[in-house]
Amino acid sequence: MLISEAFAETAASAGQSDASLLSLLPMFGIVILFYFLLIRPQSKRAKEHKQMTEGLQRGDEVITNGGFLGMIISVSESYVIVEIAPNVEVTVAKSSIQTLLPKGTLKNIDPKGGKTQKLKPTKMESENEASDSKSNDADKS
Image (cartoon, rainbow, N blue to C red; front, side, top):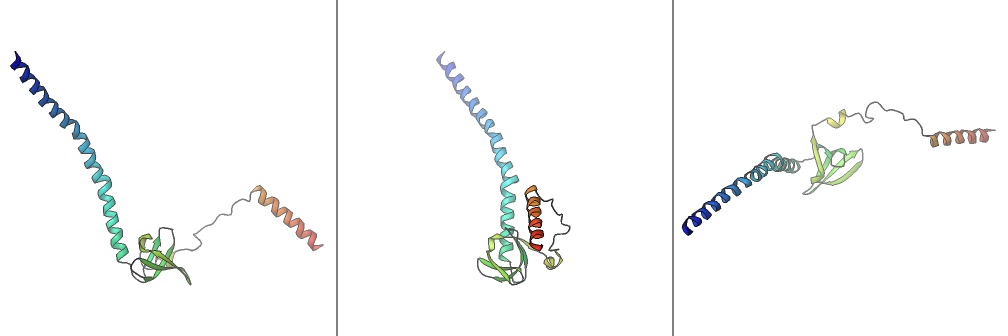
């Protein structure tokens, strides 16, 4: 009787180890899914950005992370000088360059941004304008 109980005990423990490996299978699947959907594309983007920043040269048109558009005037090891307006130069880190634009893009950009809408004045602004016009009328007479 003792021998049959021992065999039953070892058989049950072997079945439990198989079940524990099967329970880890979804976890391995999630890790693989995260790698292909999140980690790999992010490292690919980081590699492309590093190549782009290393290839910057004088005359390139860029957009910074802050949203400034400009032309590169000078390039050093870790900084670039970008002209964002005539006679306005800004020194930025190479890593803060977001996008390299095609040549001639800055010339084609409408500085006014197309149509503009005039906003309705607020109640306080309209009151200020009315009081200003009254004081101007008083000054004229």
